[in-house]
Image 1 (cartoon, rainbow, N blue to C red):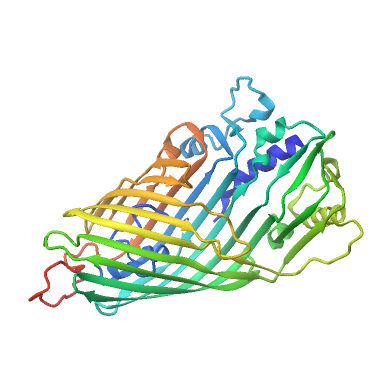
Image 2 (tube, one colour):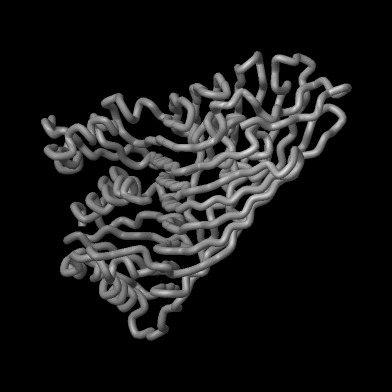
Length: 484
């Protein structure tokens, strides 16, 4: 079971890069982000200076964990050695030196662990100012979110490995989930004048199509016992899990299959304080939003299992070695059900409901000088549903230089109150590219997290005419006009 456990964790932590985030610190709070900023606040596009803005394509990948890491890892190393590399597991080396290109190791210490992967593909999307007050947008996208925020300390690899045989090991409740979906969203925002600035309120309604999903939840604590011959045992079970099997049953010829549908909602507001300095756009800007309210009901190719038992249960690794292909998943699950439930014949449910990873987003933006800004943003997950992928908090402070044609960003990021990184990003005309974790791309160190994003847009960045965000002078201001 030791090798199986190690392999499972390696895949669990690092295979998520093949999945089809949405932090993009610095760039999404830029006044020129346009329709892209709708992902963090549905009122944000009302602040864009352009009358129209189109996103052609955009992609972000975010990954972070405190469970394991690859020595000498970086995205550049992975790419440069993609056709010829050696790989070893530290549990097999046992401290002996290794000449392998990459070594998978695990963090030590009895503490709860987390792993999160968020991927976002933003498709063709458009924003248009109907008037200076009314804004509309249409956006498309695809998401894959995977994670758990409370992996029990007992399952820290080295803690589990060192635990003696035949001694109970306390396992605390936890949940992990993965969900992939696409969306088509309609956005509207309204901006109006206040005594000392403007306020915008906005909302987005999203039609969701669910593809693959799965979850596992231990609902009550129990004692797990390690036995000889790679076996484990316990005397109480209260677990729930579910999954869709359209991908595994058709592997390797799998294609996207619609297994569910749902509705999502984003709401937000932005306040902009006017500046008396005519060279500045504003003194400061405050934005708040709740995004991804909603859920998807998976009712095709789906099964949901509730296993409650007080009987003594023993599981051996050798009982499952015959299941080697993705298409064996259903058979392996049935054998597991039989082992847990004994003579109980309760059939699994044929659908389950999974909530979106809802977040509260708060942002403050200060215009220090012409074209110079500092932004602070905070993202806090809101656990509004019983089953949902576990994502972590996100805090960033980003100085930026912002011009009509180009911009630059240097985000300083603190993820999940645990992972500190520095990034670098830039915008030049229609192209935006960057990362919140530049070390993970170029530095050969312990690879545990990464983030990168790219977008290609179309808007009148070449035009000298803009619809200016309100300045501090109100009296006698000439009507605004748009130039293309």
